[in-house]
Amino acid sequence: MRIVLWFFAVIGVVAVLIVSAGIYASIHFSHKKPEIAETTILRFDFERPQTEKASVDVADALLGDHKISFTDTIDAIRRAADDGRVRGLVARTGEVPLGLAQVQELRDAIATFRAKGKFAYAYADSFGDLGGGTRAYYLSSSFDEIWLQPVGSVGLTGVAAELPFFKGTLDKLGITASFDRRAEYKSAETQMTETKLPNTDREAFTGMVASIFDQTVDGIAKDRKLAPADVHTLIDDGPYPGDEALAKHLVDHIGYADEAMDAARKKAGTGVKILSGLQYLDAIKVGAPTGDVIAILRAVGEIHSGRNPSGPAGDSDGVAADDLVKAIGDAARDPAVKAIVLRIDSPGGSAIASETIWRALKRAHDGGKPLMVSMGDTAASGGYYIAAPADKIVAEPGTLTGSIGVFSGKFLTGGLWDKLGVSWDEVSQGRNAGIESSLHDYTPEQHARFEHSLDEVYHAFIAHVADGRKMDAAKVEAIAKGRVWTGAQGKDNGLVDALGGLDVAVDLAKQAAHIAADQPVTLRPYPQPRSPIQQILAGLSGEDDETAGSAVGVSISELASLAPLLRQLGVLTRAAGETSGTRATMQPVELSR
Image (cartoon, rainbow, N blue to C red; front, side, top):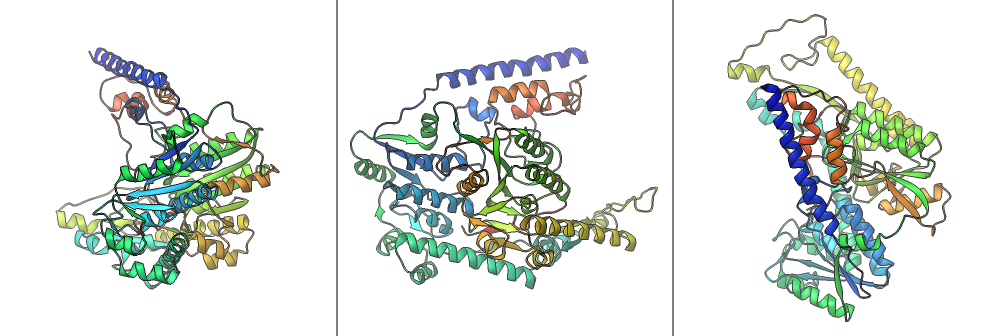
């Protein structure tokens, strides 16, 4: 009976797959490649979330929801800058979910676009509804004109960093945080052991906020042709309702989205065709790639050991060390690849996994492949650890980086169990068998080993950075101590080589590989993103789960071998990953809205 039930369960899943594949095929093959008219305007919606890397989701594809990645957005704008058929672009910019470094990379792309004699109009229903619109306005200021809907407002209010502290909650629950850090600026640990910012953390956050504030003020001042002091005053006096924002020249027009688009059509001339950024990329990418190959690898999310259940090209499961190491090896062994560019947008994670990735990158570099790093919004702690072997590190001024340090420990829950009336007993063999137990603190001997482990990781981190940056270890130690820096600060203290986005890292890779600046190159992602059909086939074959066993029943545990397949259909979800080891300190912080 159990075998019969299992058989029908498998048949049902396969039937769903066949139907889904049919729907996808009909969508895919009926899709007609758009044409680029001689007078074209590109349309973007920067209020929609964008992932760092493109990954094709089965469910989205079946529903016809084709998403554009942040990399594709930048690529589309930069290609359009050199395309004589594209006269301008219009973008929705009121509530952007982008990080500060992404905003700056997008501002750079808009500046390049405008420098070719093309126009760029920004439209917003509102910038933050009287608050929290500073980052969106900072982006919009890079456009030729800013349109604001009637009744909208400009929430130009400044930059703030807010951190939660959990010691009071833990005390109420009867839980004690037994943690330690290397070194004094590693702030994530203090969020569990303190009730407010210690002096060292306050010093670091004050410096970061000041750096980001200055970058924002200078950018707005330059683009809106205002004095920095005047922008400072405008921020202090904000936010502003629409009519006041217009009077103070913060916006150029009060009008609706259709009116902004009509103005763009009139500016472009007759015979205008509107294309989305994704449609434009689809139309322009015709024919086989040309030129030498530069490998593009991405480390997006929290770093952890092992493999990602959704596959190596997935974006939501973090940086799986085994997946990334394989991609690094494939790129390093490919004779067509002349250089490697690693894009990092990660707050850190496991020290062990970071060391594994560092080793693979070091081997690729020492094997003769030029290695450049492009940092996104965050490349801190483990995110900086894996950047250390690079020939050059590129970051945006607002990137959060550094955090060269480590913290670890455990929560002691004995007080909580006492409050709940739960008692525990234990049986063990081995003096340190309970070293990770949450029922009791470390013994003096265990604490000494714990502290030694932190020292080992910290010293290895320092040594890797010193070796990669060609710096004295004492100098690295002086700028390490777990402190987070902005990209601008990182460049000043030697942690960053150049300011800019992915295109700057690619240019540096071309130089290192002795490729002429004007010579075309093929940017080849490793691993190659898979289509929905490829994902389904991989799930059926168990390619994404080498440890899956054979199904012999109908319970969830007994259908483990179908887990990759079921994940594609949204039946199973991934459990939370590991949270120990080297970690960035900025995850709970909201900087500049």
